[in-house]
Image (cartoon, rainbow, N blue to C red; front, top):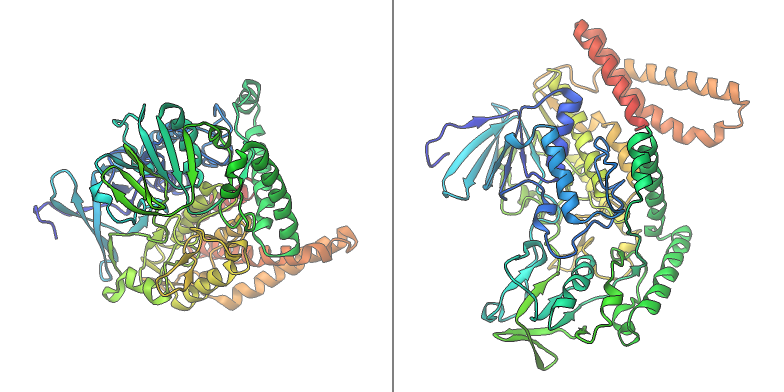
Amino acid sequence: MSSNNQKTSYSRFACIGTGLSGIGLGATLKRWYNLDDIHYFERQSQPGGTWLQNQYPGCACDVPNVLYSFSFEPNPDWTRILAKREELYEYIMEVAKKHHLLDKMTFGAQVEKCEWFEEQARWRLTIRDLETGSLFSHECQFLFSATGLFSNPRELDIPGVKSFKGPIIHSARWRHDVDLTGKRVVLFGNGCTAAQIVPNVLPKTKDLTQIIRSKHWILPPIDGPTLDVLRWVMKNIPGVQRLLRVLVFLETERQYKLFQMTDAGARVRAKFRETALAYMKKTAPAKYHGLLIPDFEFGCKRRIYDSGYLESIHAESFSLTDKPATEITPDGVRVGGQVIEADVIVLANGFETGGFLKGIEVRGRNNENLHEHWERYGGAEAYNTTSVSGFPNLFLLYGPNSGVGHTSAIIALENGINYSLRVIKPILDGKASIVDVKSDAESQWADSMQTGVKSTVFYSGCTNWFVETKKNGKRWNATVYPYSQASFWRRSLFPVWKDFEFSGSTNAPGRNIWRRLFLIIGIFNGLMFAIDYFSGGCYRKLLLDGVQHVLSQLGWQVLYEVWTALESKAKAAVSLVGNMTRAGLRLFM
């Protein structure tokens, strides 16, 4: 396997990528299970993922950082509501250092192939050293992909690109050696990234022409410096920052309604549309209203919180056009029959979405190719966003359908991490060595992701990166989770054990089903009797559905832990108390 005859290395856990998902995985492994036998492989020279790659002027988060941060690593020292890229990167590095993850990372390492070996219950990775070009191999029991949703920049699909004499810079590959002072710049794109770049580079350029293909709803800014008194309170009064995080989360979850094509959703969208429309008309140059103000539903594309864009484009050196670029010439861009002269071309045209594990050959059971597996479905998918049938002990972090349109991506990726680590708990306890999601469960999940998105605003008529249109004209949702993050969090708390197949043991979860079922019924009926008795029955109707769902799921988890303790040694009983205590605390943290 190795071209340089190096000995194959081994770690129980291996992770491809060192962004937020990968760092969250390593930290949670240590926090939950006191395990640190993990190794990372990263093609870049440093950790950080998207916050390493995106270094364009004005780069910042567009979700309040009290929420866009790890739940287990709150930071009371954010200097702004929406932190700049530099502050975010510093936070990521601090978390990696605190949890001793940096010395477990190999950089400049491109994973080219992953193969599953059933007999050994291991994954073997073939990795290229990008500095020397040599190959080496690494094996692991559990393989995690943390390659991210936005890792492959979209190329410019216009004839003549190679003929351009000046630099072409993608926002995710920013060149700090290129000075834009006094330069003629053409910028492609009109999304969140472009709205941050323009006000930060326009003042120094000779002129800037922005070429757009579509419109976006732009809301008033929400950013600003964090008050010193608030930072002091969050740092010194226990619980305040966590309470603020919960309140911001609840507000973002309230906004989830706007994505639903319901009467309630229409009312929420109307309010946001009214706010955005008034702001855009007031702030943007009147001559650009027709180019900027959308004619589609609010929420169909990701909303933009203005960070100075609309004010900046009043400059005489700025021009905006939606005429298509037909050719890149040596001296500029041909648009509408004329050439716009340019010294530099900037691309803020996004990323290739839906291309999970792109460039990596992944082979599971029976030598099945993961990308061919997805082609049979019509696009990338994964059960509960993490697992693919036929690819055991493989988990995709922030995988297919993990994307969010209304809240923090870190919440979604933490849910995926926590869920995956709950699924492998029986293996860590020695009850099995392999876990694989069942094919029918995967198919049902994939269908629900495609069906669910059709009842959302993402299907209301605009073109967006949430739903990809294939070459055959079929639309496939490989990106967005079409339900609330509260529902995803609930699903991630309680694995549905019947949807998984464990091998290497006869004592896997889901056994002794009748014995457990009777106990669940008894626990549930007893609790409902108590609720009815003490409330006089007035809350039963309101609480029944919700309590029934949670208790039915919780029952399986509790019973699994109980039987584990009864059938194992005293050490398992001690572990039970700790596990159930942590599970209870996580319900309220």
